[in-house]
Image (spheres, rainbow, N blue to C red):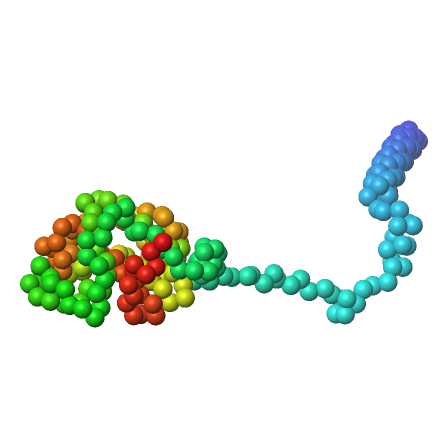
Length: 231
């Protein structure tokens, strides 16, 4: 019995020492983890003085101090305004006096006649002639007689292909019996001396006359004698 008690006593001593070692180990490991946590927390936290400065700064009144960002107002300009501005720049350069050049480098074969009837070979009758006919072979260059813009490009059986140029102040020049070649389009800005077409013979209203360009000038819609403006 005495031997058994001695063994049991030794067992409790060993057990107590082992338990103490375990507790010490756990305590040391816990302290190590706590220290690592503290170091990381301090490293990630801003300095105390910075926190104090931020906390002491006055808060802005977001309702009164808020600055609204205004969207820029787009300055849209219509294609018509752009076209008129460009046209004015071209037209006003020589707008002091309406002096035109010859629409083709050729001679006049039939003059203007608004109050005197002239014979028409095509219709075999007498009628007025509201323009001037310039003798010209097919595909001969046709020139713009004065600064302006292309107001009309059209084709009809009687007059063939027709181009109308608006020159401002009510003046317009009209070119008839043109070829089908497309050189200018409606809305184009054109200048004095610029090629705008070539001569054709697709109009039947003067088909029995030699190949020519039929040319007219109007002022506020009324026909004028082109020869009065030729320079």
